[in-house]
Length: 204
Image 1: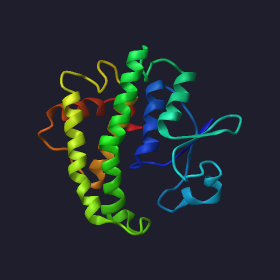
Image 2 (image 1 turned 90 degrees about the vertical axis):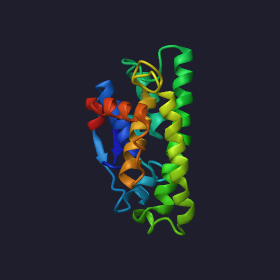
Image 3 (image 1 turned 45 degrees about the horizontal axis):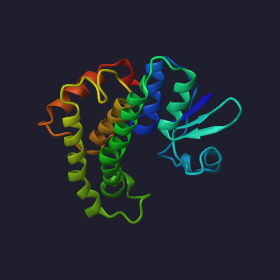
Image 4 (image 1 turned 180 degrees about the vertical axis):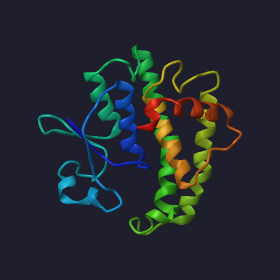
């Protein structure tokens, strides 16, 4: 297998790299440039018809995209340590929180990036800058929600570090890079961020 990858600050490839690091899995990385448009070239469209990253190529030539789908596949091959829960209820809770993180935090950060950031102006035409800027408030509301969820917890879903933490860390760090800062008042979130950023996988 090999993983088609892009380096920091791209958040989605980083999710899978962090997951691999937590699992102790080593895969060859094939770099596909986002900045030069290589993800929109025919050879990458043959791997992922939406022209996105990351993409996992299996030994038989099958391709998988979408970070959680890739990580679920790898979890099935390497179940320890469990990153998607140990029981049906844990798995359902982790799925719920991951999905809500994607919608409540990832979506507004993504809309700000697409419509309000100068880096994307040449590829997102037209940009709706007023709409993009409006997502700052939506993003902060999402952070407020996860700050409340983290009250009394070491990690997003409870006592174990899971895919939900990986998704949140990749999004919060990317949002910070594009200019969406986490409010100082969110003490639970900031303590969680300091804690998970110390894990070796955070450097992946």
